[in-house]
Image (cartoon, rainbow, N blue to C red):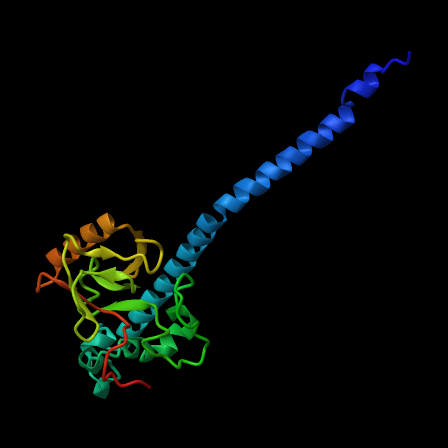
Length: 228
């Protein structure tokens, strides 16, 4: 009768090492696949907050050349964009800063499903991702200057303008960054906010300004809005 050697019955050391290595590789691939959406979302948030920092810098450069005021405080006769508040053309607040912003690509959030901007400055309400704080002032550093367009107060928009208070239903929608968002402040800083932190920031802003409310204008489609 033939006998089976112990070497034939068991794994060799080399075979065992190969099996362990393969299992380790498979585990790594599974974990990476599970974390990929979260990793991508994190990368988008980082790129978005960098956009908002650059936008804030553009606002401040423009302000330094125009009597320490932002474009929203001046009419077209002074190269400003105040008329855009009435027309609902939010993108005009950014267009007057084309020299300061250098590239239009900054105005589209990487997490937004809108049309990606090139450097053509062919702006519209359908390819700009960020709101504008209409009453932002360099002397009031806590005020909202710009931020992701998925902010809401739960009510209908009037020419894209909404008023924000530090209480529900003010917060972020799921449109971008999954109920989170990035905000640029009048002091030039940019931060990532949950809904709770956003409300806290709005409370600080409303204590600083004279009207006790934070008005922002979002890039939204409206019937009768004049496009470029």
